[in-house]
Length: 197
Image (tube, rainbow, N blue to C red; front, side, top):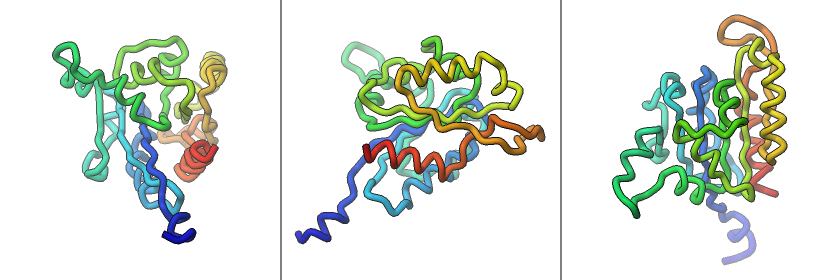
């Protein structure tokens, strides 16, 4: 194998894309497509973790067949007795990086206080701090501007989690202001930059 061929070999990276109960979850298929068709040094193996309320916004027919989607039932169906898979632990071991896009106000609050009431929150609580975790807040401007939101974001950042900041635009409800999830291209850029470190 010559040097050029060696430089063209893509590195496999295992990526958890997690979605919470925000309408921005509708961007999930676009994010997956961008990552899978990207001309980069990485080949992404993707698993999607969704909360109960995120499922409302996911059109599963738009997800590639090679992407596994897991939810709360995945955790409980996999385990019957000692020695069976513990999905939230296995996911954390498997992944090189996790991206929560979108992260709703509700799930942000849960993360900040350490709640473990669904599969995603269990993955987060058991996350290896040697691995990167990116979060992309998404909520109405009034929710985003509430003082507790800044406190929760600061708490996550103090643990080493990396924020992909919101943007200002006209939101789905018609309000205009900050709180919209970052653009997909921006999220992809953050993923690549953090895997290259």
